[in-house]
Length: 162
Image 1 (cartoon, helix red, strand yellow):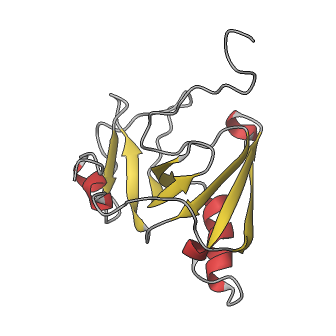
Image 2 (tube, helix red, strand yellow; image 1 turned 45 degrees about the horizontal axis):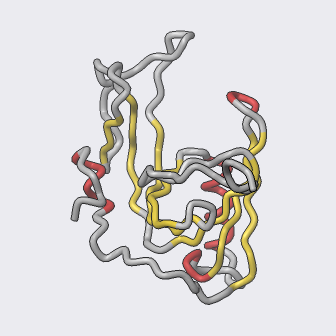
């Protein structure tokens, strides 16, 4: 016997799924909402359903003095690794394009009908993502999403607060 079990992992308390190095398997549980976001100088997200018409004054700049406004998708997922319902917000175009290609392919269709695995490798600007879909299966986990309000993120509110 040891102090901790050999395969012990710290529990994840975040309501948002963040991709870790290696495989990240999840099941999409809701339709997506889409919008635009930027991060403020206070490191807070600002999201809008419509594109920002002007560059916001409080937008955070990177080391080169550049700022970014990203298009995003947000949707509810079940993370098999974290064993819980979370929100996945995507801004990575490579992942979005891969998921969209599965949606557009008649043999795959609705992403709520199968699991998706995103494999992350590298770090920083060298981060790469590979996306694969597992065969269609019935979702077997228990997941109540009825009280999650995705649209709350546009008002900087917590979607999990009913």
